[in-house]
Amino acid sequence: MRFMARFDPIFQTALDHMAQQHTRRVLHPMRHVGAANVVRNGRTLINFSSNDYLGLAHHPALAARAAAWLAEDGTGAGASRLVTGTSTRHMAVEARLAAFKGTQAALLLASGWQANASVLAALLRLAAGQGAPPLVFADRLNHASLHQGCMAAGVRQLRFRHNDLDHLESLLGHHAQTPGMRVIVTESVFSMDGDQTDIARLAAIARQYGAFTYVDEAHATGVLGPQGRGLCAGHDIDLVMGTFSKALGGFGAFVTGTRALCDWLVNACSGFVFTTAPPPAVLGAMDAALELLPTLDAERARLVRNADHIRGVIRDCGLSPAPSMTQIIPIMLGEAPRALAFAAHLEERGILATAIRPPTVPPGSSRIRLALGAAHTDGMIDQLATAIPAALREST
Ligand SMILES: Cc1ncc(COP(=O)(O)O)c(C=O)c1O
Image 1: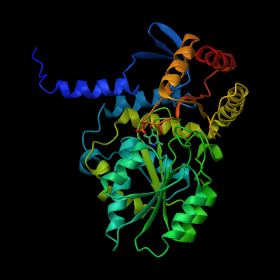
Image 2: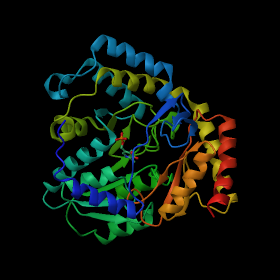
Image 3: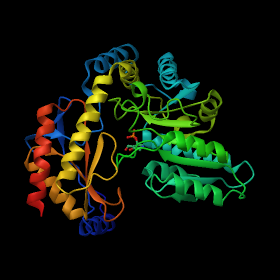
Image 4: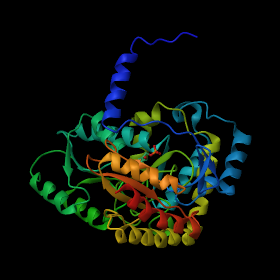
């Protein structure tokens, strides 16, 4: 075997620099055991780092429909949706999704990252063609894929303080006379802090300033809102983006909005046009998850109860769960080495709860990100509640 290693010194220097900064990442092989456990380094751990919030990734209904659609239609879609890739399955899942979200239309995309990076880029390029550069008002802690969409369109963002709608309003007011289409880009549940945007107020502000609203519901879909329809359900939000990769237990993403918006994206969004359509097994899991969601109120209530309890445990230790209001609960620890040590102590106690460090979060805000799931038993929640104060004692 021949290896081309000529450029390795460049890569190695970059890796060494990351290691010095405590930000180098490595891949840890593991195996899922049911919805709530993983085996890592030969040990069974309780998984508190999965976004499979409803345990659907291991639900038999999803596995059965994925297997049935795969058996009927094969492993791959064969082409882009615009070439020969659109099946009646794609149309049926989109129709089910639009009905679930209460919108005119829906469009499936390959992944959440790809959706934000390409849908937002297309939208901002269209906005730029309306006579003046668009004004993009973006939450300071928006997900990397939303930044990517803005960067791909070459647009400078006007950042408002995290989840601070007063600041958003004052920026809109400040730019009231500046020409250009206004686009507000935010998340309904923030992936690293677990806090929620006040969507009713966001919609009212957008209406007042004539702004287009783009809201990422990756972490709310399935979990929050009536029957898990998300926090934007029932509000005037122009474009809602969501994923099937988290509470819906599968893979892929979507946007919902008007028929004209979705028809335009079919023509203008490079991440839709120039990629192969989602394959049958993935569609089957999507379809079954959408069918199940309205029946999962007990699971959603369990998440709320357990999250309240764990936030109480964190506060009782003198630590901060930041402004978490959802199943995503950070334990704020400051510098990366402290977060890494805390994660190691939790792991010794059978808990997998990954440390999140810059650049995923701002410098000085390294944390453990706990993600609760409906599949966690009372015993598992008790084990976590005991492990947190113990890890704190051992790491100070
Ligand atoms: C807020 C947010 N948007 C988008 C994504 C990307 O979604 P996906 O994992 O489906 O690519 C994520 C997941 O990391 C996310 O947290």
